[in-house]
Length: 458
Image (cartoon, rainbow, N blue to C red; front, top):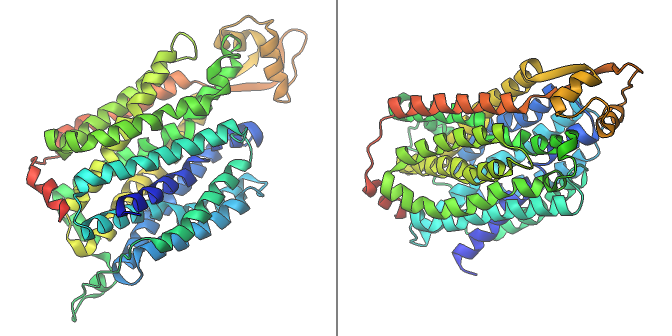
């Protein structure tokens, strides 16, 4: 099997083992376990917490002591074991702790997979800008396949989604040991300082204004990256509480609708080489930020019937929003760092986007949604107005009683019914992304030079 095909298999499985549960875990948390929203923010916060130190730590290890492909394989095997265990957890607190362990194993493998791909392509005299995107696109296909399997097997609200991911991770873990050897560079001077010895030189990049600014914006955008992963499927699923949308195709196959986002990714990944050569890294990242504004804005006004086109268009825009920043950002790091710290630098990029940014975004959004964007209803009349139906609607009454609530003869609920105001939630996210885009356009200075991208093939 050629090097490209071997990396394609790795990329496919890399994101398959994430896609099997990432989009649907909200349905498991809210629909099956009935746990609260603030704690759910902590679930996605575990990805950020793990990314604060694990990608950087594993990058240091791969740069200094252990072959990247071996470290990659070990992490996936342990990740599989934890996924098999998480399905047995019965309390939200324990679930969060176990998920943190799983994320400590998984999150660094994203940066490691990039390093393995870049190293392997260079060793085989391939052009990274040209050859990496078609390989990475198979990761998105793996994510889509996992989502469809989870949805079509009826696992999107059950623990079986973790078993699906666990089996894939176990296969990938053993497969990793067959990948090309990516040996540590060990480019340490005889009189090296402790900073150089431990591989912490990547943090010196913060001393460079442009790199520091890039990492700061990575952090702020990282706060938005996981929002649709955390809440997208739940947003669509909650339309089932609106009687006029209850029988919609979107409700039954919400995960498949969301997978349009990943289908879009495959197209935009393949377009990245053209956009990078034509517009340069800064413009591509700015396009990504504006795409996030559209992603959230279209969700704000979409619905499963008359506004279905907005939901679908939002999913299509997602491909540009996600890929253009992540891949162009990764290539920016690759082209602006020394070869001996590139694994560490990629880990630092992951730390800022999926670490600091994701933690702040997850915790802040979970708190804000509960505090400002969750409406409380005390009677059938109030709830009917929000659900755009009449107070005597049978489906609305069925929904209230399914929550263990009661309705008195005069339409008063035994306990308040809480509903998320998704329109305002998505508008707030859109404004946040717009502010970031404007600031980035003004503050980040980077001149496009096609020679920088050509140099990545050597």
